[in-house]
Image 1: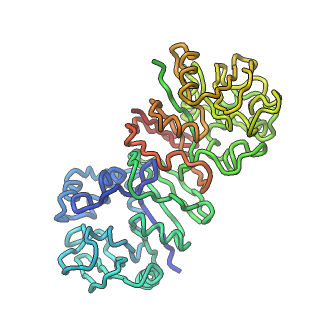
Image 2: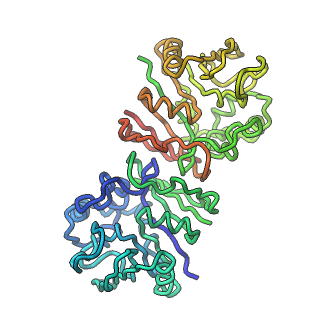
Length: 225
Length: 225
């Protein structure tokens, strides 16, 4: 059985995984990049994220220090042994409603950082997208269980990473299918946005912290069942 | 003007400052001591907390390792320059409704760890209690503003510490009168209980993290306006 995990998922001290009012200019919502700052400074980010065409992301890559250390080790680990990804539609892009055409190909440019099959949850059908570097976006319209079954199949024994966003993680948590979550608590207060835990009892779901590590720019916690 | 601060306040990773179902056996609610474990291991706790008569607290003191280090430094700092405390009634004791008699004198035994005036918020009048070591419990029945005015007066230029619990901190946050909060995030998931931040926008209130420190058993964050 493929393990299902959330990894390198950034949250603010007050528990928000994304800021409010996401749009093309703010892919992660207003101030939503701040909890991810630790990741943007890693060598992993600098190496994996190519030219995207998105002004905010390309600016992040330009500013990236490509640093090694604890944060980078955990970023590395988050990509290890992953055979497939699941993403929510809002993480794939800012478009709402039916796909007007095939022009939107994700935030990440021609060669996205996944290099595996990626299953995008959406209510609107669309043909798969073959990208450079082995990333294939498939669009799943029949629910989270179907997407997980497809991802496990595609992962061929490797692990499935639930990439987010917050709403998708919350749905898979509620379904009880996530085995492990690595969260990176960033020294940031968002105050509003999408809350990762609110109304979810992680203790009752069987999670407990099994590892804590202080990185250069985040406090890392691994929760396991 | 006396600075008003929250200090060494323990929260779980999921943001709970106390567990559910507080009673005489569980002064901090079910599993509510777990986020405080870092504090119980400090030299400060071992030295300040005498025999209390409460089985759970006395057991904690017996088990205390009295360790020095980052956690202990922050515990020390939390008591420095404090001229008065404010506590909620539930933090003072498990009694609800009118005081039946004067027999309840707090959780901490004859010589409580405060050694200053302590103002206890309650709806029911009661005469002040003089304890050993300079702690005087006064009972304030006319609201949080009145308690703060009294505490500032009593502090004589030193700082006022809002000791908790969660509900009292939330009320003073909403009133906009807290200048600084040192929170200790413990590697614990409570899942339920009293949430410190829920529905409160700390960013909008003007707080930002100004200091982060990894202790032996907790991740410390100082929020300032």
